[in-house]
Length: 337
Image (cartoon, rainbow, N blue to C red; front, side, top):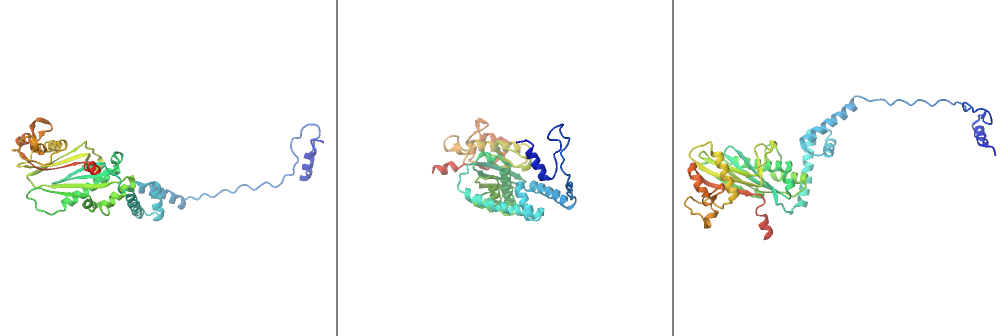
């Protein structure tokens, strides 16, 4: 059979000829009928204006909302879509959703041990506060969101202390337990109570946390509060808040304000943190025995050749009280029991 037969059949079906395929030079072109050329593709219209402007505006709003709230882009996008692009409503929507998720997660994590955390110390005017907030791991305690929670708790405690309308003739000191601390207002720029801020932090960081306790001291003229935080961390965003694992406040009575009081107060705070006294005691206490738990009769931390009382007496101040916080103290004893 000729190899050209299939081509001839194909050409016959198409109504054209295959001239020159049998022999001779190769044809320069196929002899197919030229049909009408296909129409050129229609250009797609380019819509500039409202649609493009809307897209750019949405991206701008998304970035702004992300910066304001710290929530993920996905959640910020959901909020903007739910609120028709209104930034203020979207921010409120995000906080409400986070609150719900936070409380839900807090309920699931409740009961898990919170041995880690931070002590926070904050001073303003004649008021000083010490707070403890706990979490599960040291990793989370170093997270800025957790540290911001400690700051919020310290600010809430400070406002509570400052709002107590009492006429001070001597110093005043108070303590707040976990439930009392949880019910304090979160502050002028935050909604709800401190327990609501706690739920938000749990929702964001995914660990169980507790607002363990707080102490506050207010002093009138003639008194001074020395303070110390061991391993203190400072962050520009946290203002004058000091963070660490140990903290102490020492209340001193002095006849005059001296420039050296700040340094003296820090040294006294170091002693309280390092020696962990149980009471102040008096200058008449003899060293040794039960007196070893009394602050003034203990060997001075920075110079054990003398007692703390012997160090303080020439300074012209009297130590009248102190507060000492150690992060996680009591947890091990509770576990043992």
